[in-house]
Figure 1 (cartoon, one colour):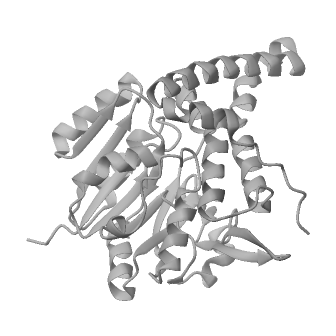
Figure 2 (cartoon, one colour; figure 1 turned 60 degrees about the vertical axis):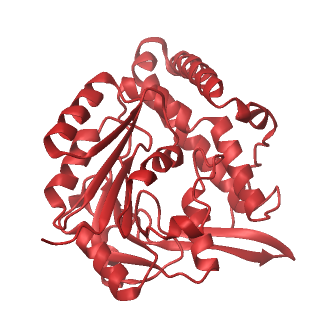
Length: 343
């Protein structure tokens, strides 16, 4: 019997709407033996029932909490159940394609990489719209000061445009969206930073790995795709708005700056804060569509903003009752200034 070398850990990213197609893709397209640990942080009742049924049928480990979890908090709950040579983290809204895991494993074996990421699309994999194919993430010197530089490779390009340039090679960045890691990495590096709530955890770990001289690889023969919103499910809005809430964003970015000794006005930190804010505001446009048809653009937007504000305040109160040690940080963590576009 073939040895089980990998634990696949599925953790919530920002929604529960696509739980079923994402999980079923793992069952359908994973050819090598694997353990599955699924972390379900406060999903709606119909999703909870589906996961409980599939856990009984397939015999995987299901960890359920009745409250929402940050992605890193969820991954931390799964780690004690991962006793294999490798751990592969997959977000709960990612669909995988045929042969994805064995290709990641083959790359790790043949290159001795400590982290391997796949080619990641957005939306239907058949459309070939690239989210990222590795990328750059490093600390640089600019004008005598430390600065962070990060860039995805081939974002929003189609596979038919750049496919000839894709090959297995070293990279500086692979995301937790789907990332194969050697289990021993968690004994060597700080993995459970409690203040990475909404962002920066992928960057931090890749920086740690590369600083220590451990290879990070991209394997484009392995393909996954992120089924990101919109559209939204109404039942997902509380989690989404907490996940990308302004306090979570500010706390996460401040911690990243502290760990890597970056100035308060770091260009990337400000630009990423802008992206996080805009990503949260996708809900405004989605909610406001119908009210705008009835009461006009301005009032329809106001209705959406009021609903969002009400949900956000409720979820933040619940979160801080569970994590009171972060209350002061939420008040004091600065909002990074949006930078001017670089030419």
